[in-house]
Length: 274
Ligand code: ATR
Image 1 (tube, rainbow, N blue to C red):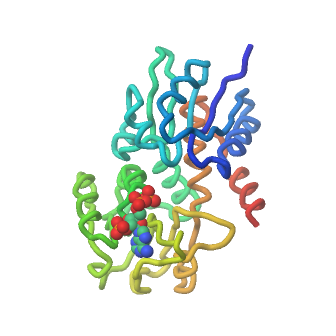
Image 2 (cartoon, rainbow, N blue to C red):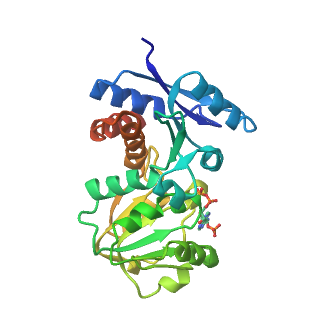
């Protein structure tokens, strides 16, 4: 009998850690799967997906730049994929249809709540940025329904319209950085791409409530600019490596019905990064 096939599609894909992560999950849980990475032509996403599932592929992870195309391609969408407006996981159903999910937000929230802030309920949360990365995680963050969530962004209007799209049972507002003056938060999540340019949004140390935690959705071999800023002002910090492994664990659970342990996998990658 052939082994169930899984893959990650992206472009570029060379540095993807997804095969390593899923192979660790498979080994740990005794699930027999094969997982590879595939660099897909920017104009060839739909064909590549069709080919993969026609050749008895069972599930895909989708990364940059195809998350919106995957959203369009899926036959059905989970609630969190609809909220995110993007898909990072495709799974073949028993009736032959393909469901699109987005596990980024739930992976991040689980990482934050298990390793950084617990309980999260009632906490004051500030999210920096209002682009695709933030939209991708906002639904699961709001599901935790802390006292209130503020989204701050360089372009204030983008934060305001994102907040408006999500405002419901949980109070969420969007604004520019200047409007944060006088407020303090228990948890600040950086979802901007500023640190890619070695940049930092204009933040005042007064934003950090006593004992504040700061989470950067990015990760690397060193602390990000945002983490260094937070650490210098006494906050406890974490990077997004746990989110990377956490979103993969949620995909694995969707495909295989088994939720793998993330801690040993995070530790192994952390060691490789050092
Ligand atoms: P992604 O998919 O990574 O979210 P994006 O949709 O382009 O990428 O969003 C990037 C986010 O980082 C935006 O919120 C952007 O702010 P603007 O909406 O004002 O552009 C934010 N960002 C990027 N560079 C920044 C910088 N140097 N300072 C502050 N915010 C920055």
